[in-house]
Each structure stands twice: as structure tokens, then as C-alpha cells.
Image (tube, rainbow, N blue to C red; front, side):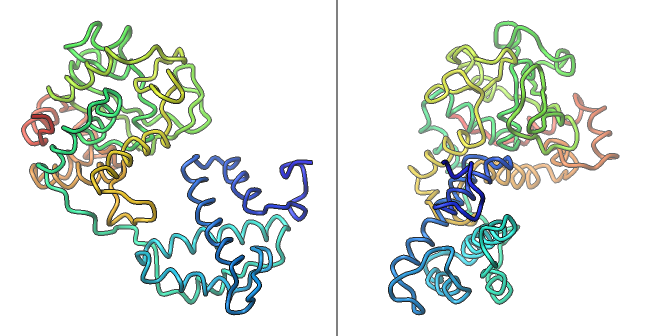
Length: 350
């Protein structure tokens, strides 16, 4: 009998049971892997023996003192925010397994109450200059990787929003048929632009395809595509494999999942693999150290706000909610948004 078929209290491997349920609840593969990596590390720590039990204990037997000992062992090894994140993973694991009846209690409850560390929701991030970012992009030769990273950097969109783009959302004057066989009416009269919809939600059907990622954007947004991003995307469209989905996703796999819509996990791997080569990413590093897709959104926002001095336009491009401001820019797209964007956005290609 598999663990999925047993009752929660009967499973041989509580961590595997929990991680599988995390997936059932809609968490991404990357999130599942993060949970499993941290929980297995904790499991190994317990098995090696703790101050309380020199012969070792299982995760089911662990007490709050065992948990606190593991957290204490991480101090000096990891950033405070990372320690707090690891503690939250452990807390959620024990809380969930207690809720489903597998464990009697959650030993992490008292631990998190007494911890000094907390998750930093707005961390100071690695300082990377435009010149350094330009050098980083110059080293990326693969058409898909270059297109994904350039699009994130030049638009400030989220990874999930990039995954949900279809070819119809892109209007390129330099590509055959404007970049696709059919173009959304919202961009058909706006050459060199990209439409980011607020519609896609995980599990919802959009353009004939059930989506696995959600867009967190509050309003539909039309983002300018400048000359250098246009060149990158034209090159990508020329190399892009035929899509498996009739929705014609803009970004599809060229390695695993050939022709399938990219997932957030795939985008994250593309970015962090290149960042790691540059020394900008390491497993276990916090947001202050690691360059991820979300870092590019931060980079875009910081530089464009600094250059334009116009928080309203940056809010519009990011898709942040601000009804009166957003409506102003929606109706004044050509005169204000494109001109301001093209005059101030950084160049990435030499």
C-alpha cells in the first residue's frame, strides 16, 4: 500500500507524505523541493543524535528542545532571515502533520515564539550596477535563456506572468505577422508592445489551456518593447520549438518539456543557474545575497524609479493597483508611458 493510500498516522515517511500533500495543495515543484531539502536536513541532524538523545530520534519523536538545538546549530551558518524561513518550514510541517492526525503535537510552536530571527519581507539586496548586469546578460547565449532573462529585466514582470504569456500577447513590428499569427486587439494597434493580463489564475482555463501559474497583477498592462528586447525576442521566435499547446505559449521548453509552456520552476532554474555561474546565487543563500527572477523585478523597479522620478508610471508597468493613476496611464499610453519608458530604461546589450 502506498503512503498516499494510508492514513496519515500510518505512513513510514512523514516528510514524503507532507511534501506530496504540499504539491496537492498547488505549491510549485521548487517549493516542494525546498521543503524536502530542509526537512531531510533536519531528519539527518536528528538521526545523528541530539543532546537529549545520543542515539538519535525520528522526526515523529522530536521535542521542542531537539528543534531548538537544530535552529541554534544554524546560527552563524545561515542568515537570520534564512534561519527564520527554515523554522517556518519545520513549523508548517509539524502543524500540518498534527492537523491530519499523524503527530500528537507541534514541537515548533514554542520554538518560533521564542526565536529572535524573523523573515525579512523587504531585505536589503545585492547591489548590482547596470554595467555588471549588462556583462551578465552578454554571457548568456542560449536563445531561450537570453529571452527569458532579458524580458524579466526589461519589463519587471513576475516569473508567473512571463510563463503565462502567449504569442498573441506580443506585437513586434520586426517579426513576421507581428510576432504571431493572431494578436490581441489590445496590442494590435500598438507595435512593439507586450500585453500582460490580470486574468490567468492557477487551474483556470485561459486561451483554451488550463494554467498552472497565477498572475498577481491587479490590472491588465501594456508594456513597451524597446529595440533591444525586440531583437532578442525576434531571435527567440526564430528558434522557438513548435508549442504542444494550441494556446501557443510564448516561452516553451527546449530541454526537458520540449515545446511545453515554461513553469515558474523552469524560469527559476534558468535564472539561478546563470546567476550561480556569476557567483550571485548559492543554495541556502537569502534574498539579500541571491539573484532570482524576483531580484530582476526589484532591479527594474529601483532603476526606473530613480531615472524617471515617476512612481505612477513604474506602478503602471509593474501592474500594481492604483485605480486613478493606472487609468491615467492606460488612456495616455502612447504619449506618456512609451516615451518615458524608452527614454529611461537601461540598455542591456552591447
